[in-house]
Length: 401
Image 1 (cartoon, helix red, strand yellow):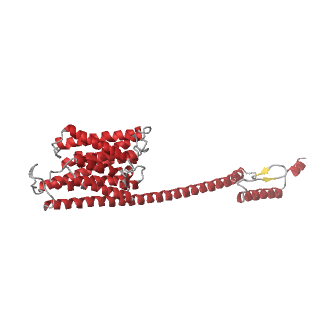
Image 2 (cartoon, one colour):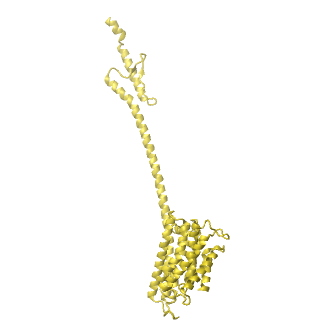
Image 3 (tube, rainbow, N blue to C red):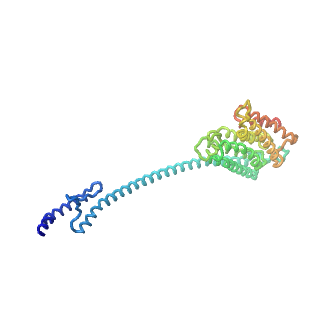
């Protein structure tokens, strides 16, 4: 019985060798050509899967064969992800490098433009000031009078030349600071361009007369040193309105109504030209220049500021763009500024000789009359207020004062 049982259930040695060979061949095929990363064993008719021979070491070896394709697949996927990430990083680095290079080139180009424009302004101002000093040194410019009642003029001394040159430089620096006080908030959006324009319009000429004029000597032709200040600002406006200088465009944008830098070549340019003409023609000889510039600056400037805020519901019937509030502001500002500067320059500083035949009450009354007429002129569509108003004020001051 034992013999037959052994013969029935135990395969022969040849069968066991064939069985082991098939198992090893199937495992080898599976590990060499895996499908979709899966390991398939050899299944026989009894429904069991053969993975090893009777040895436990063969089982561990075949288990390693099963894990190896999965590890190879994961490593290959990980390497692909690393390569893709590296390519993205290289592309991003290349883009950032190109962007930084373009920014540096743009910045260097802008810096070169600004430097060129500033050099033009500085060289022009220095050359003109040197020319004035040379002309005064060689007595081509008239010096101070011998006394207040004499027509005899003294030579332009070196001390007076130094004083007037220093006064010119000081006024130019103060003017630059004044514009920066309003152009920087306008650039940052903290102040509207229209407001910055009118604030500079309102303060520039009065402060130049109040602070700047007394700094110059009593030489008759010290006016030629003083006129360099508004002419220098005129040069800045021309450069700002016709070039790509970002620093001067800041000034031009702040001087424009809508922020367009080309508008600076209109009213603001006319403003500094009128200031230059009044400085040369009238200077501190009489009140004509003081009243004309005060009316143009304080009167016209505050009329716009007050009119836009308080004049929406009180327009003039014959001038819909102008308001009654703006006209009142024009009259009060021009009158107070003209009277205040006249008293400051005449009685306190002593730079202007007020007509002795006019009493203070008469002087104030005539200045108020000039301001009222100019306020009416400002309502008429006769042209740019920057020249119609000071021209009217200058003519009336010449006739009444």
